[in-house]
Image 1 (cartoon, one colour):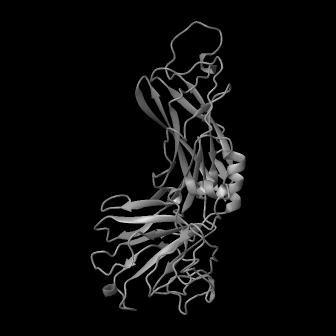
Image 2 (cartoon, rainbow, N blue to C red; image 1 turned 90 degrees about the vertical axis):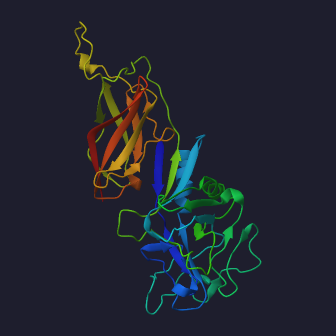
Image 3 (cartoon, rainbow, N blue to C red; image 1 turned 60 degrees about the vertical axis):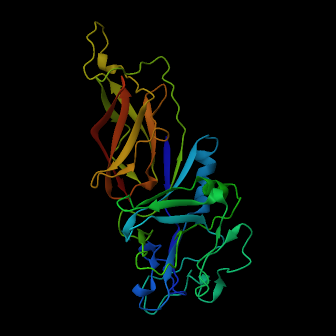
Length: 369
């Protein structure tokens, strides 16, 4: 029932047609194909790939303090589309762990003169320093490039570390790829954490019918859609003691422990007060509304952006299941993956007597800087 989001510490695009140019602070990450007939600079087809890296120390801290001992864990690489075009046939985006350290740099696409103080198609560090290997690769790694454009990064090829996403016409264009095995390999030091490289499976194709453009927002975007590494683990626990669980669809839920404002590093345990909306009449001395009930185990939470109605945390039967202790039903929310100065809403889903109910009682909160 825990979801934690990490944002990149650096990212950059490598362009074969600008082999020494750095794009370390550009707002866009790109993995595109440019046939020669669309290229004014050269008569050869060109391609772009991009790198993205997350802090190894953050991964170690979270894995050691929060995820250690859990039996179910998942990691997903998520990027949001800025412009995806020319998907007139199946296009596969491959995701590999990078082999070799690289420097971010401070360049942008189209800088004049070009900025060359960071990673590029030819070099890992800066213009003229630490060229990407084009032969004698590190064990278990490789590179791929045409003879006219050596470079373009190196990456590990172990099948377990390879992820991909297929783009087809009219399908979703955001990236949501399972990279659990790679993150585990970083945590266990099986391979070094130099980030991911994302590239199209088929590159340097000189055909006007194959010119897929895949552009995504980078960590330097001014939008609310930066890339992230989403870590999810199951720490569900359910112990109600002798307290009753709600039955029937006659239900009222209020959210406790919600001050309404949280900073981006906050961790909050939301508690749920549950009772029948129209309780059965009984004869007793104590007020009937002081009896707190519990949600059944088939209950889940979600977090929605108030302005866009997008699910920032969607209902998940494994990772957003609502727990219970002897006080009440509850769930823990990590605020680090939420954008500051925005309002969010919590929704509750529960299954009662075979029917699914979504409870939306305007449980709002805001993330502040």
